Every structure is written in C-alpha cells, then in structure tokens.
Length: 304
Ligand code: PRP
Ligand code: ZN
View 1 (tube, rainbow, N blue to C red):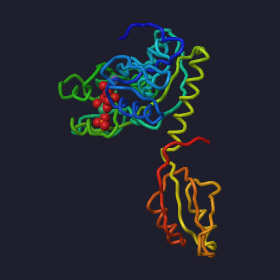
View 2: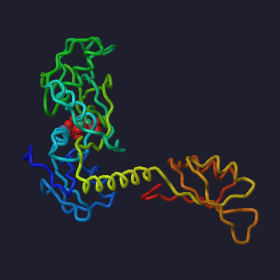
View 3: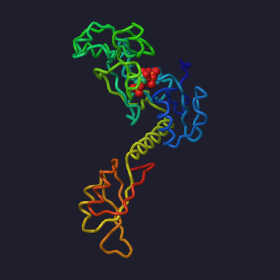
View 4: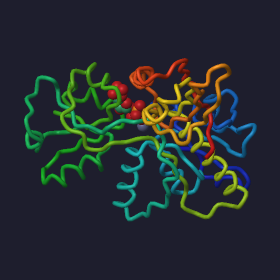
C-alpha cells in the first residue's frame, strides 16, 4: 500500500490497476481522452504531460480504499472490488465516501459460483454447508444470506480456481470474464451472484476549483470517447423515392444530411451519424432498399 499522502491541490490523482484485467483498457481510455503518459507501469506514480492528472498504479483491491480515504481523487476499478470493499467497510462501522462518476464500457465480468465439472449440481441448496473459496467473502456471504442458505466461506487472496484441486474447498466463487480460467481448471459456473463493469469513482469531498475544472474536462472527454465507440458515420447514395425507407433503416440516426448528386436528379447523397453499431445485415437491408456506394466510417470522438 503506498503512503497516505494527500494529492496535490492543482493536479488530480487517479488510481489505476497496475496489472490485470482492467489495466490495459484503463490506459487505453485515458489515451483516447488525449492524456499522454510515458513508459507506463515502470513507476508507481506517473505525471501526465498534457493534462493535470497523475496516475498511481496499484493493486485493484486497494483502489476503493485509496479513493474513499482521499489519498487519490479518482480511481478506475471494477464494481466487484468496489462493492466488496464497501461491504467490508460498512461491517467495520466505516462510511463509504465515494461517488460513481461514470460506468465505463469495459471490464465486464460476473462473480459466479463454480463447482468441479464432475460434481452434480441441480439447485443452490446443493452448495449449502460446503466450503466455498473466494476473494469476495462479503459478496458471497451476502448472497447466501439472501437465499437463506448457510455457506462456509474460505477467503483466499488469489489462485482461487485451484482451491478445489488442493482440497481447500468444494466450490469457488470467482470472477468470470471469458470463462477460460474456469475451463482450464475443470470447473463450471452454476450461478451468477454479481455482474460488474469498470467504473470511474471519485472521493466524495469537495475538490479544489482547479481540480474540479480538470475533472469536468476529463468527464466530457470520457463521454465523447464512449459515445463515439459504437457510433459510425455512414455515407450512401439513395434514390429520392427510397429515402423514407432508408432513413427508417439507419440505426439511431437523427436528421441525416442530404446532398445533391452531380448529374443525377433522381438520387441524393445521404450522410448520417448512427449512434448504434451498423451491422452487415443493416447494410444489406439498405442495399435492398435501393442504396448504393455505402460507406461506414468509424468516429473517433464526439461532442454533442
Ligand atoms: C479474474 C479471476 C480469474 C480471471 C477470469 O482475475 O480471478 O482469474 O479474472 O477471467 P476469464 O474468465 O477470462 O478466464 P483478475 O484479472 O480480476 O485479477 P485479480 O483477481 O488478481 O485482481
Ligand atoms: Zn485483484
């Protein structure tokens, strides 16, 4: 755990996972927000060159605590870790002074109960009284309590997936993203107890005006990046007569721009921003409706 020195008054301090599921995507998000850092991960603390933010690289499990205690202004962390920490602090009689600024569109995973492949399972009651290994004891216990079942929770900080093989537990409760860790360890998920994504959290204290301004700027950029992630710019040629049908087919597009086509009175060029993904199926439907020369372009940034 890094020393609990408060962040400077004029620069935001943002806690990020040093290595793990969220680290690459977190840095990628900052990168797409135009925030440049040199040689990430070599150091514990990095100063962005062109934005008043310093990045602190730590274990994800420490991030909620660092933010709630005010050691960092901001943190990017999975809701799973956040909720587990919040339950833990509440059990110790502590408050949870944080605000979720944005839910981010990466880091999707679920906390799931899993049993060895050969163990029969029909209902949750089959797990009652069994030893369940997890790094999320609070969430696991809460789930069993809500179901009115008894659980013998064994807390491990890592390598939970090998606990059944070592004879330390009968089942596990662990994060599943692609499912390959479970598969490699001959385990199968039987119940999801919590769904999670990455979030940007902020310490619930007043920020200095300079930092508040920087945060507003950062949030606007994050919104711009997230908005643009699915959005596409679409250009096509359309017979005037087919315009109503073609407009109806465009996913999440408002007010397309229509331009005359030189030398052809019966057709126009249509340009539109589609807020949703444009699939091959959509393009085929557009073509059937009479559209031609269909181009779909990615949008890098967006500000509404
Ligand atoms: C989680 C979990 C598994 C893995 C599952 O670890 O503990 O090991 O991800 O992913 P998969 O279904 O794609 O195989 P995480 O990266 O969150 O690291 P940590 O638990 O050590 O923080
Ligand atoms: Zn972790």
